Length: 476
Ligand code: NAD
Image (tube, rainbow, N blue to C red; front, side):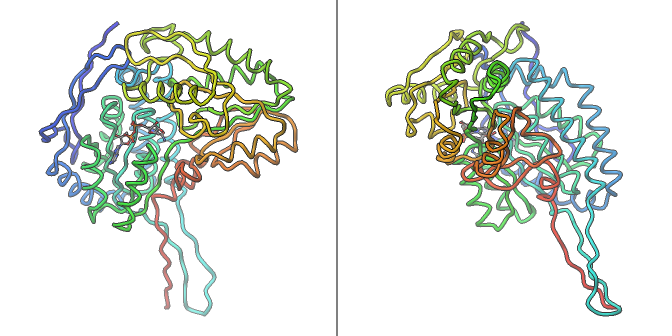
């Protein structure tokens, strides 16, 4: 099945226009390795135009009352929902995930922006009792200013929506650099929203990533930076932001531990874990990756987990029977294969399913006999790879889980009050789900510890990231 696909243009100051860079970027369908189109990129002049427009637009947007900002965003969200099928189709073609997952991602992105839109009406400061008569002390919450946002290719809609929704609801303008590998889905989403906004409030660039981030972060107009992606790029952007004293939020991936206690319902736990482990072919920062299973149920768990894993149907995302699509690009396929081979050469045993030969498919893989210093435990797998290990106690599982340099999400399966208490208190992660998977919802904060980054997106904390605090002391 093939459908038309066209690379989008850049959105600068309310106009969709061609990028003027001499380079273009090939957009590749990961299901067959064929080039879908070539993406025009922004040059320095395009970026300068976007910077001038974001400054002008901020001056205007910050004056728009919160109720109107909310109404405009809600109309944009309604248009996104009308165009869900087109957005999802583009996402599957350029990113590879099954169409059902692409539709769900579009719905989640719409939900996120809707929640932020509503939250715009609840941003308020406070009045502090004055120390002396005839004076008044107030605290104001004001939009921080124009935002530079960078979103990746694994969940291009949701991870852009977290940034767009928060910035626009708070009264900031935003320049989003989308991922060059997955541009069309984000462009349709952005177009749905921008039709309700003054020109320049929401802009979309694609470019040579290092050039765009250098120009945007060093520009005096930009007051806030937000990035989701890898640790090395996050570290580089944090250095740039520090040099220019810009506030930055970083979400840099995870390596989520799953602690399965002896009282866990194995069939229900396995069904939930396999679905979430292999969603988006494992390319999710909150994907369960390290399974610490009580030794008394380890054999039973492993049999059920591998049976469910190897029954997954792999194929192109547009085929209705597909449960797991290809990896998003050739470098992920190479990286996943290298990680599995390195782990095996360090003593792990690999159980692997079948995978189609064309495109960037990696087989679903379960690793056992994994030592604590195995490559699969040190690096974020970001692919369809699960490591399953027996443990003697919850305390041992927590200690092993905390050895990772990542700390984004964690999962626990038990009804033991003691285990719930200990894991909630001591697991070094930003979010924990117990007997479920819900660590990412619009109304709750989402962010990491350690190498997973800092700052939160979503929830009131996510909104706060786009606000600054001003104290006013008035003497009559
Ligand atoms: P990468 O480090 O090359 O790029 C990661 C993202 O950052 C991409 O979207 C890329 O366009 C962007 N980027 C790269 N250099 C940049 C720069 N100088 N300025 C601004 N943006 C820049 O990695 P990759 O090969 O795309 O992915 C590798 C790893 O990244 C994965 O294994 C995973 O660990 C991590 N990752 C995490 C997330 C997440 O959701 N936290 C998303 C994507 C990738």
